[in-house]
Image 1 (cartoon, protein in one colour):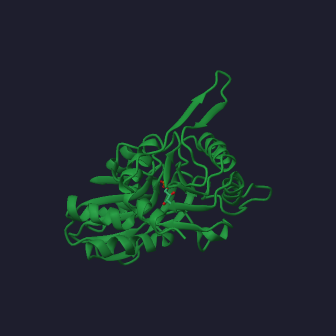
Image 2 (tube, helix red, strand yellow):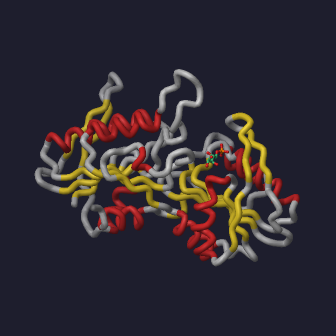
Image 3 (cartoon, rainbow, N blue to C red):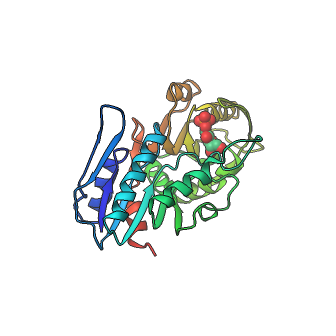
Length: 295
Ligand code: R5P
Protein backbone atom coordinates (compact mmCIF):
# COMPACT_ATOMS: atom_id res chain seq x y z
CA UNK A 1 0.00 0.00 0.00
CA UNK A 2 1.18 3.53 -0.78
CA UNK A 3 0.28 6.19 1.83
CA UNK A 4 0.19 9.77 0.57
CA UNK A 5 -0.32 12.86 2.72
CA UNK A 6 -1.83 16.00 1.23
CA UNK A 7 -0.50 19.30 2.52
CA UNK A 8 -3.09 19.32 5.34
CA UNK A 9 -1.85 16.04 6.79
CA UNK A 10 1.75 15.37 5.78
CA UNK A 11 2.86 14.53 9.32
CA UNK A 12 -0.14 12.39 10.08
CA UNK A 13 0.37 10.45 6.84
CA UNK A 14 3.98 9.80 7.86
CA UNK A 15 2.80 8.43 11.18
CA UNK A 16 0.21 6.22 9.47
CA UNK A 17 2.88 4.93 7.07
CA UNK A 18 5.13 4.13 10.03
CA UNK A 19 2.32 2.19 11.68
CA UNK A 20 1.92 0.26 8.41
CA UNK A 21 5.72 -0.28 8.19
CA UNK A 22 5.99 1.44 4.80
CA UNK A 23 7.72 4.59 3.63
CA UNK A 24 5.31 7.50 2.98
CA UNK A 25 4.74 8.11 -0.73
CA UNK A 26 6.22 11.21 -2.36
CA UNK A 27 4.22 14.11 -3.74
CA UNK A 28 5.05 17.53 -5.03
CA UNK A 29 2.47 20.13 -4.11
CA UNK A 30 2.97 23.83 -4.69
CA UNK A 31 1.04 26.94 -5.49
CA UNK A 32 1.35 28.85 -8.75
CA UNK A 33 1.75 32.64 -8.52
CA UNK A 34 -1.90 33.05 -9.58
CA UNK A 35 -3.06 31.05 -6.54
CA UNK A 36 -3.79 27.76 -8.34
CA UNK A 37 -2.47 24.50 -6.85
CA UNK A 38 -0.03 22.14 -8.58
CA UNK A 39 -0.07 18.47 -7.59
CA UNK A 40 2.35 15.80 -8.81
CA UNK A 41 2.45 12.14 -7.74
CA UNK A 42 6.08 11.01 -7.52
CA UNK A 43 5.33 7.28 -7.16
CA UNK A 44 4.40 4.53 -9.57
CA UNK A 45 0.85 3.90 -8.42
CA UNK A 46 -0.40 1.84 -11.39
CA UNK A 47 -2.15 -1.28 -10.11
CA UNK A 48 -1.42 -0.36 -6.46
CA UNK A 49 -3.62 0.25 -3.44
CA UNK A 50 -3.23 3.87 -2.39
CA UNK A 51 -4.45 5.80 0.66
CA UNK A 52 -4.65 9.59 0.71
CA UNK A 53 -4.66 11.35 4.10
CA UNK A 54 -6.09 14.86 3.95
CA UNK A 55 -7.90 16.40 6.89
CA UNK A 56 -10.26 19.24 5.96
CA UNK A 57 -9.63 21.89 8.60
CA UNK A 58 -9.05 25.68 8.76
CA UNK A 59 -8.95 26.12 4.96
CA UNK A 60 -11.24 23.22 4.07
CA UNK A 61 -12.03 24.42 0.55
CA UNK A 62 -8.36 24.55 -0.35
CA UNK A 63 -7.64 21.13 1.12
CA UNK A 64 -10.73 19.61 -0.46
CA UNK A 65 -9.79 20.83 -3.91
CA UNK A 66 -6.22 19.64 -3.46
CA UNK A 67 -7.65 16.24 -2.47
CA UNK A 68 -9.72 16.32 -5.64
CA UNK A 69 -6.69 17.01 -7.85
CA UNK A 70 -4.63 14.33 -6.12
CA UNK A 71 -7.23 11.58 -6.25
CA UNK A 72 -8.16 12.43 -9.82
CA UNK A 73 -4.47 12.07 -10.75
CA UNK A 74 -4.23 8.73 -8.92
CA UNK A 75 -7.24 7.40 -10.81
CA UNK A 76 -5.78 8.61 -14.08
CA UNK A 77 -2.43 7.00 -13.25
CA UNK A 78 -4.15 3.63 -12.79
CA UNK A 79 -4.24 3.16 -9.00
CA UNK A 80 -6.06 -0.07 -8.18
CA UNK A 81 -7.91 1.36 -5.19
CA UNK A 82 -7.94 4.80 -3.55
CA UNK A 83 -8.88 5.03 0.11
CA UNK A 84 -9.65 8.59 1.14
CA UNK A 85 -8.88 9.41 4.76
CA UNK A 86 -10.20 12.75 5.94
CA UNK A 87 -9.84 12.49 9.73
CA UNK A 88 -11.73 15.76 10.12
CA UNK A 89 -14.57 15.88 7.65
CA UNK A 90 -15.44 19.53 7.18
CA UNK A 91 -19.01 20.56 6.40
CA UNK A 92 -20.47 17.63 8.35
CA UNK A 93 -22.39 20.01 10.62
CA UNK A 94 -24.45 21.31 7.69
CA UNK A 95 -26.01 17.90 7.14
CA UNK A 96 -29.50 19.26 6.50
CA UNK A 97 -31.25 22.26 5.02
CA UNK A 98 -32.11 24.23 8.15
CA UNK A 99 -33.38 27.28 6.22
CA UNK A 100 -34.92 27.42 2.77
CA UNK A 101 -32.37 27.58 -0.03
CA UNK A 102 -29.34 26.42 1.97
CA UNK A 103 -26.76 24.09 0.44
CA UNK A 104 -26.64 20.71 2.19
CA UNK A 105 -22.87 20.93 2.46
CA UNK A 106 -22.28 17.52 4.02
CA UNK A 107 -23.71 15.48 1.14
CA UNK A 108 -22.25 17.90 -1.42
CA UNK A 109 -18.78 17.33 0.07
CA UNK A 110 -19.27 13.55 0.01
CA UNK A 111 -20.26 13.72 -3.66
CA UNK A 112 -17.13 15.70 -4.50
CA UNK A 113 -14.90 13.23 -2.62
CA UNK A 114 -16.48 10.34 -4.54
CA UNK A 115 -16.44 12.11 -7.88
CA UNK A 116 -12.65 12.49 -7.61
CA UNK A 117 -12.29 8.70 -7.73
CA UNK A 118 -12.25 7.68 -4.07
CA UNK A 119 -13.10 3.98 -3.85
CA UNK A 120 -13.45 3.76 -0.06
CA UNK A 121 -13.47 6.31 2.72
CA UNK A 122 -12.42 6.60 6.36
CA UNK A 123 -13.13 9.45 8.75
CA UNK A 124 -12.93 9.95 12.52
CA UNK A 125 -15.71 10.91 14.95
CA UNK A 126 -17.67 12.74 12.32
CA UNK A 127 -20.37 15.04 13.58
CA UNK A 128 -23.47 13.06 12.65
CA UNK A 129 -26.24 14.63 14.61
CA UNK A 130 -29.01 13.93 12.17
CA UNK A 131 -27.53 11.07 10.13
CA UNK A 132 -27.33 7.52 11.39
CA UNK A 133 -23.87 6.92 9.89
CA UNK A 134 -21.55 8.14 7.13
CA UNK A 135 -22.95 5.58 4.72
CA UNK A 136 -26.03 7.79 4.53
CA UNK A 137 -24.01 10.33 2.54
CA UNK A 138 -21.38 8.15 0.82
CA UNK A 139 -22.11 5.54 -1.81
CA UNK A 140 -18.60 4.03 -1.66
CA UNK A 141 -17.79 1.94 1.46
CA UNK A 142 -17.31 4.49 4.23
CA UNK A 143 -16.33 4.12 7.88
CA UNK A 144 -16.46 6.53 10.80
CA UNK A 145 -13.99 5.29 13.41
CA UNK A 146 -13.63 6.74 16.91
CA UNK A 147 -10.68 8.29 18.69
CA UNK A 148 -12.49 8.31 22.03
CA UNK A 149 -10.88 5.09 23.33
CA UNK A 150 -7.45 6.64 22.63
CA UNK A 151 -8.45 9.85 24.41
CA UNK A 152 -9.80 7.81 27.34
CA UNK A 153 -6.49 5.92 27.57
CA UNK A 154 -4.58 9.18 27.48
CA UNK A 155 -6.72 10.57 30.31
CA UNK A 156 -6.21 7.41 32.34
CA UNK A 157 -2.42 7.53 31.96
CA UNK A 158 -1.82 11.28 32.14
CA UNK A 159 -4.64 12.96 34.03
CA UNK A 160 -5.57 10.25 36.56
CA UNK A 161 -8.96 11.83 37.27
CA UNK A 162 -10.37 11.27 40.76
CA UNK A 163 -13.82 9.59 41.03
CA UNK A 164 -14.44 10.70 37.41
CA UNK A 165 -17.74 11.24 35.70
CA UNK A 166 -17.40 11.36 31.92
CA UNK A 167 -19.85 13.82 30.41
CA UNK A 168 -21.09 14.37 26.88
CA UNK A 169 -21.99 18.07 26.71
CA UNK A 170 -25.11 17.26 24.68
CA UNK A 171 -27.24 14.21 23.92
CA UNK A 172 -25.40 13.50 20.66
CA UNK A 173 -22.11 13.23 22.56
CA UNK A 174 -23.42 10.44 24.79
CA UNK A 175 -21.80 7.60 22.76
CA UNK A 176 -18.45 9.42 22.91
CA UNK A 177 -18.79 9.82 26.67
CA UNK A 178 -19.65 6.11 26.95
CA UNK A 179 -16.60 5.04 24.91
CA UNK A 180 -14.29 7.27 26.97
CA UNK A 181 -15.82 6.16 30.28
CA UNK A 182 -15.15 2.54 29.35
CA UNK A 183 -11.40 3.21 29.24
CA UNK A 184 -11.53 5.03 32.58
CA UNK A 185 -13.79 2.42 34.14
CA UNK A 186 -16.01 5.35 35.12
CA UNK A 187 -19.67 6.26 34.93
CA UNK A 188 -20.90 8.57 32.21
CA UNK A 189 -23.78 10.91 31.55
CA UNK A 190 -24.73 13.72 29.21
CA UNK A 191 -26.06 17.25 29.53
CA UNK A 192 -28.78 18.89 27.47
CA UNK A 193 -27.64 21.79 25.34
CA UNK A 194 -29.61 24.52 23.68
CA UNK A 195 -27.68 26.60 21.15
CA UNK A 196 -28.56 30.29 21.32
CA UNK A 197 -25.97 31.66 18.84
CA UNK A 198 -22.91 30.12 17.16
CA UNK A 199 -20.82 30.98 20.24
CA UNK A 200 -23.42 30.87 23.03
CA UNK A 201 -25.26 27.87 24.47
CA UNK A 202 -27.43 27.04 27.48
CA UNK A 203 -26.67 23.89 29.45
CA UNK A 204 -28.96 21.75 31.58
CA UNK A 205 -26.89 19.36 33.74
CA UNK A 206 -29.79 17.23 34.98
CA UNK A 207 -29.29 15.55 38.39
CA UNK A 208 -25.68 14.30 38.08
CA UNK A 209 -23.72 14.19 41.37
CA UNK A 210 -20.35 15.92 40.88
CA UNK A 211 -19.54 16.87 44.46
CA UNK A 212 -15.78 16.37 45.00
CA UNK A 213 -15.48 14.47 41.74
CA UNK A 214 -13.61 15.18 38.52
CA UNK A 215 -15.65 15.95 35.41
CA UNK A 216 -14.18 14.68 32.13
CA UNK A 217 -15.90 16.05 29.04
CA UNK A 218 -15.79 14.05 25.82
CA UNK A 219 -16.86 15.74 22.60
CA UNK A 220 -16.08 15.66 18.90
CA UNK A 221 -15.23 19.32 18.27
CA UNK A 222 -13.95 22.33 20.17
CA UNK A 223 -14.63 25.35 18.04
CA UNK A 224 -15.34 28.52 20.05
CA UNK A 225 -15.17 26.60 23.35
CA UNK A 226 -18.60 28.03 24.24
CA UNK A 227 -20.18 24.63 24.87
CA UNK A 228 -17.64 23.33 27.38
CA UNK A 229 -17.06 26.75 28.99
CA UNK A 230 -20.75 26.93 29.85
CA UNK A 231 -20.83 23.28 30.93
CA UNK A 232 -17.72 23.75 33.09
CA UNK A 233 -19.27 26.65 34.98
CA UNK A 234 -22.32 24.46 35.65
CA UNK A 235 -20.04 21.65 36.91
CA UNK A 236 -18.24 24.00 39.29
CA UNK A 237 -21.59 25.06 40.75
CA UNK A 238 -22.27 21.37 41.41
CA UNK A 239 -19.02 21.04 43.37
CA UNK A 240 -16.83 19.37 40.73
CA UNK A 241 -13.15 19.19 41.74
CA UNK A 242 -11.16 19.24 38.51
CA UNK A 243 -12.55 19.58 35.01
CA UNK A 244 -10.92 18.11 31.93
CA UNK A 245 -11.99 18.29 28.30
CA UNK A 246 -11.16 15.68 25.65
CA UNK A 247 -11.85 16.38 22.01
CA UNK A 248 -11.20 14.55 18.79
CA UNK A 249 -11.00 17.65 16.59
CA UNK A 250 -9.30 20.80 17.91
CA UNK A 251 -10.87 23.26 15.48
CA UNK A 252 -9.95 25.99 18.00
CA UNK A 253 -11.47 29.29 16.93
CA UNK A 254 -9.46 32.25 18.24
CA UNK A 255 -9.68 32.53 22.03
CA UNK A 256 -11.26 29.09 22.55
CA UNK A 257 -8.58 27.73 24.89
CA UNK A 258 -8.45 30.93 26.93
CA UNK A 259 -12.22 30.73 27.26
CA UNK A 260 -12.04 27.18 28.62
CA UNK A 261 -9.27 27.96 31.07
CA UNK A 262 -11.16 31.05 32.29
CA UNK A 263 -14.16 28.79 32.90
CA UNK A 264 -12.01 26.59 35.14
CA UNK A 265 -11.08 23.74 32.78
CA UNK A 266 -7.82 22.28 34.04
CA UNK A 267 -6.56 20.53 30.91
CA UNK A 268 -7.78 20.43 27.31
CA UNK A 269 -6.61 17.50 25.20
CA UNK A 270 -7.19 16.84 21.50
CA UNK A 271 -5.96 14.55 18.76
CA UNK A 272 -3.90 15.29 15.67
CA UNK A 273 -6.80 15.07 13.20
CA UNK A 274 -6.10 18.81 13.27
CA UNK A 275 -2.57 19.85 14.25
CA UNK A 276 -2.74 22.20 17.27
CA UNK A 277 -1.02 22.97 20.58
CA UNK A 278 -3.38 20.53 22.35
CA UNK A 279 -2.96 17.66 19.86
CA UNK A 280 -1.42 15.19 22.33
CA UNK A 281 -3.07 12.02 21.02
CA UNK A 282 -2.25 10.55 17.61
CA UNK A 283 -4.99 8.89 15.58
CA UNK A 284 -2.37 7.17 13.37
CA UNK A 285 -2.77 3.76 15.09
CA UNK A 286 -6.54 3.63 14.53
CA UNK A 287 -6.22 4.87 10.94
CA UNK A 288 -3.60 2.20 10.21
CA UNK A 289 -5.82 -0.44 11.81
CA UNK A 290 -8.77 0.70 9.69
CA UNK A 291 -6.64 0.57 6.55
CA UNK A 292 -5.41 -2.92 7.33
CA UNK A 293 -8.96 -4.15 7.78
CA UNK A 294 -10.50 -2.31 4.82
CA UNK A 295 -12.96 -4.35 2.78
C1 R5P B 1 -21.91 20.32 18.59
O1 R5P B 1 -22.95 19.73 18.61
C2 R5P B 1 -20.57 19.69 18.70
O2 R5P B 1 -20.62 18.35 19.09
C3 R5P B 1 -19.69 20.51 19.60
O3 R5P B 1 -20.21 20.44 20.91
C4 R5P B 1 -19.65 21.92 19.12
O4 R5P B 1 -19.36 21.98 17.76
C5 R5P B 1 -18.64 22.71 19.91
O5 R5P B 1 -18.62 24.01 19.43
P1 R5P B 1 -18.15 25.19 20.37
O6 R5P B 1 -16.78 24.84 20.90
O7 R5P B 1 -18.15 26.39 19.48
O8 R5P B 1 -19.17 25.31 21.47
